[in-house]
Image 1 (cartoon, one colour):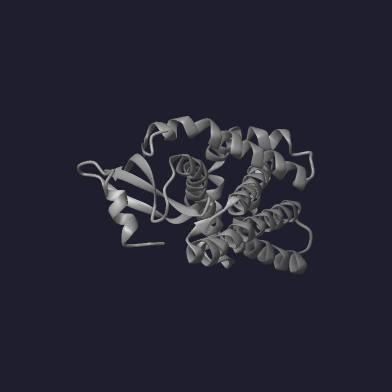
Image 2: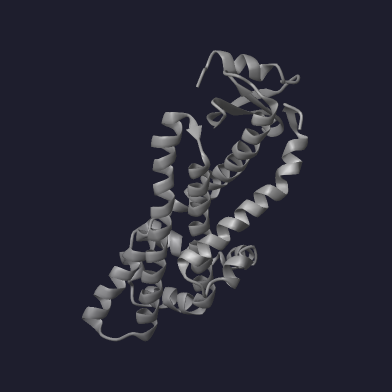
Length: 267
């Protein structure tokens, strides 16, 4: 990435009071690596340009724009939503489940606790899977994308596959939460009655309390995952293939809008 030539070219298309941001990755077309520039005013993106430190061809730049724009939109989505959700530790579910199990071994059968423990273990397993996918891509982005300052079609496909898996898991988490909401409320009541609640860390206590307050929010999220609901019965591989196509379709649908804000080259 030519940090001397590119900024000068990017500034040519800047308007008054705008800040200039050059994405740290380019896309190569016919031997030239093109970079996407974003112009912002008051944190709002106001326009784009495509620049290169090498031989420039408008047709190649427009092709690069579509690839760079698609990747940028979805990688930003990943970092703002996927990576944030991945910060939730599976231990928020598994530690209470362990404490419940220890209580049951000593005190015998308790149906509410048994059901709750099973739900917490299922949720913990799903959260661990979610984190593994998210952490895998974060590491890939840091070690491969940023070190090479370049993306290609494989990188775009990899990102969309990761996002598809995250959406798939998020749907399963939300569905399980709504289905088991009454059991989880009963679990909380029983944990407090048996004093188990006081044996888990304060962060776990707060998390479980906040989780049970998020029913409406979760129901709203599930409404946005209608495709995931329709294809739930398919294999994971079949689901992700469909979801990748859905992401591509959504990105391509918005492309004409992005092109309206493309200052250079003009579409």
